[in-house]
Length: 354
Ligand code: SF4
Image (cartoon, rainbow, N blue to C red; front, side):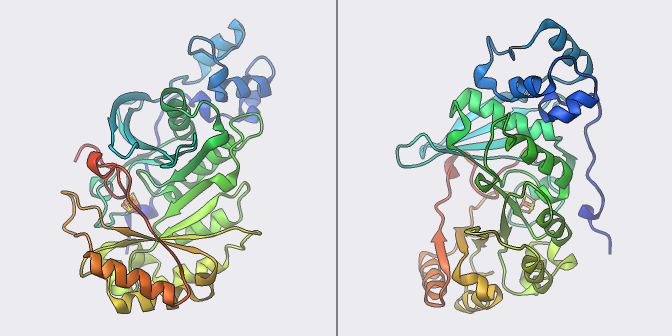
């Protein structure tokens, strides 16, 4: 059987985006000046003067001639009553993506950015609005980095020390692994934003081949698994990836992810009424986690209803029984309050052009 994610997604054509180039790339492309300084200026937008990096004319002309120097453009910002903001960004070929800016609820300057890795998504999860769009193309590494730079510039924080990044926006990051990994390399570079890989989480629907590849890469971000079912039958009907890699193969792949000291995995579980929210599901989930349940986090997320899916939010009672059963079985459970529901920015609600 052929699946949409077996094929690489289309890439944007044209000059490379300057914000996705490492110092080594700049040097090999023949950039004049010290490549580390040029890289550092491109990435540290808080040091820019009048919205431009502080670089010599020679370097600026070279960048204009050889690279695409455009950041995504903020075309719309929707503010939620809970403090989060959904930003619709326009890319230079006119495609639109969405990013969510979520300040911590308690008054600190800490911010989580939920960023996108693709325009649309090939994985087709039935509860997800992005999945209903299909895949348009991969984001290149500069467009991924550009989301962070643009949001820092417009909504803050002004320095990266208080920033956490999650690849939970549009797209399956492991279906665009090379660009996503290069973006992580750049975002964590000591001459750039220097964001620790421990503050970057990649969330996957269970693309086992990608998990195995990412497990061996450096720098390695944290991993989150979007699980959402406890039987192959139910998972295959809501997450087509399960037809290629079933629950047992997915669980086995996690054993190849050799955990570093204090590293935690996250399991995301969207609870859908009458689909995966029973007492038996809670037991099966705990069994599937096995030893992992004692150290790692299960995030329960009540379904965010939207017009692209028939799935419904669970009742308060079943959410309560589900979370209590998991806790009684020794799991670490958090019931996640979705941010930005009123502006369609919550989990599974990011969408354009439907
Ligand atoms: S849940 Fe994630 S992987 Fe599934 S369709 Fe939506 S964006 Fe793609």
